[in-house]
Image 1 (cartoon, chains in turn purple, yellow):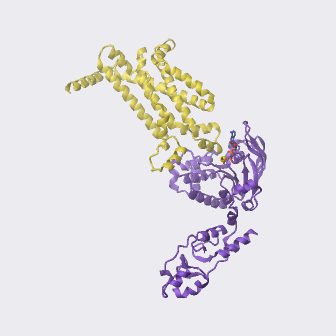
Image 2: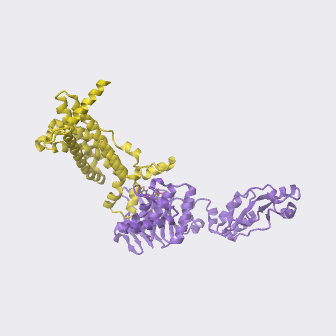
Image 3: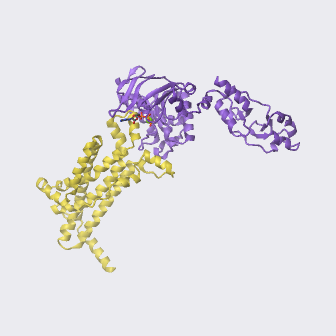
Length: 369
Length: 261
Ligand SMILES: Nc1ncnc2c1ncn2[C@@H]1O[C@H](COP(=O)(O)OP(=O)(O)OP(=O)(O)O)[C@@H](O)[C@H]1O
Ligand SMILES: [Mg+2]
């Protein structure tokens, strides 16, 4: 547990980087510091490993005032990942990862073996261990940065905008990876970002900072989106927070229809009665993989005897996973589908059913209560 | 054509005939060459040994650098001959008369490289080292100095060529290695073979020394070579931010070889 007790940082030039901060970071959870540029996130983060000394107040780790700890020794027990990865250009990837164990006096061979394990953990090819950092892509460098921070198995991990220098696709991949790692490792993570989506995605708890280094709200992601404490937090989380909040509700709760899902070996006349009441039917193959939509009108206009698999279909867009996705993903799939309906699939990509706009609407209404 | 050949043959003949004289260890071309190497290499070594701690001090205490740099630059402006003569009353005709000024010149060239090299260590690399629990001294030794090494070696290449060429001037005070071939045997006796032999050997020594330093650079900083993977512009820029110590940076940081007489 990390506690800030009235911690403040005032610079001699009068800048208040952090105003009295009272905050408790729970053990084994991910706490995200989010806020606009200059709101004191990095300063607060660095108070934890004494890279910044508060001008007032106390920071404790597991109840111990960290001023009683030697800074270098304290830091070896706290992993740190920074934005540009900060890898040592003169050390190979493997030796970069082995840095802290080596500092702690672990034998070189043991440290390297540990580094190789970590490369696997963060999803890097073992052959990359012999490369120099500049021979890696930005995303790979970040993975090395994470591996290096984890090498000595510290209970605390500080991450300062670790994924902000990579493109959105790589960033999402790295976020997934971090979520997976955290499920496995259960570290106390403090993560700094100014991207509210990233905060909502990764955080168990989110601290929103406002300019002047004040804590505006400290809450779970869900409560942050439902009940912003004030106008600043409300505008910071964005006006689409209603839609974003849907990501906290599982798509499992939706009622899916199966009657409009038809096999590709059925003939037009077999399904005409379905098309009476529904403007679209979904065609699937024998393995229940979706093929596409057919409009009811097109069915009525086509001659009898033709199998659905031979007809032209409208692309089904993207699907949502009934078990693992949220209402937000289902809504997104429906909005992007030409038929205005979302296709729900299981883990193997087999169609379970489709959800129409009216059913989706009902689900959304029930959420807002 | 044949006259050129005859002339070259004459020069070569002179070099072979005068290479060394058994029983007279101080006469001939070889003793001059060895003297040249001794004077040049000790000056470079002493200059380097001074430049590194002074450079570290200048990075640690920023206000030291401007006065120190001005001071050594002023020294550099003093013609080398004058410095050699000024040394005479203190050091007599010992090697030190040549080595002290030459070591100072090496220092002048190296100091900015050491300081620039240490200063260009990317801030995020330094921050990462602090965050991982490196103390200041350990950080300096195992992170900052190695990262600065390509630029320091680049400076050393410039300084060593300049020093090797300047040793010759010390022949005016009776030292000067190969310079003595050029001055005493050549100019005074209006005889060109020793001059040519002296020049060729000085240039060859400079080239060999430079090659040795390039070799040392390859061995000591294998990471500064970026020739293994074709890179896109974006990746290259990112790599430059992570390790801005490749050949491009060396070219821009090391000054042009000073034309020092
Ligand atoms: N050495 C310093 N002297 C004076 N002011 C400083 C110093 N270091 C930081 N500050 C100020 O403290 C404030 C908080 O900085 P901090 O780096 O914590 O912000 P941040 O929330 O991390 O911002 P960003 O999102 O841009 O990284 C800023 O206004 C900054 O200018
Ligand atoms: Mg910051």
